[in-house]
Length: 135
Image (cartoon, rainbow, N blue to C red; front, side):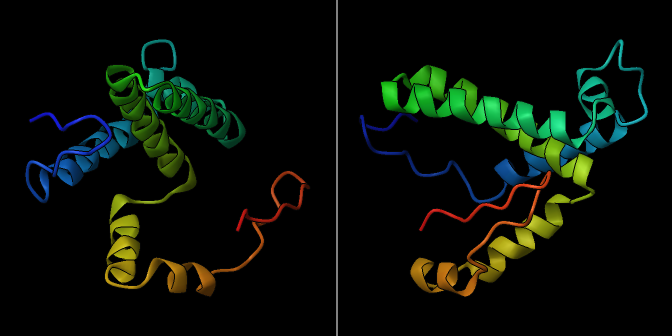
């Protein structure tokens, strides 16, 4: 089902999207010890978190470019890339989808402004660089 321009279509149902992400996460997990010469996931994971995070950031920027440009089909494709690379980040960091789903459930029904105010105002120090979150 397609939505009118500027409006998102409602989800087809409540769950299959998370199921697909759970399955894809399991595939990425299973590739951790695979041969990097034959598995894209294994190749990314073998390069370490800094490279995994860099690739996720690159894909996120490409997704945003397509969103701003109004390229709907490209936005959908880039969004899939972002989700895949986010799962690679999770695997590299030892985070399971269930942890993220639990955090989303915890936030459900809480005002976005109140929830955001409850979080720390600074990002953790990464690679020796201290940054603050954008308000």
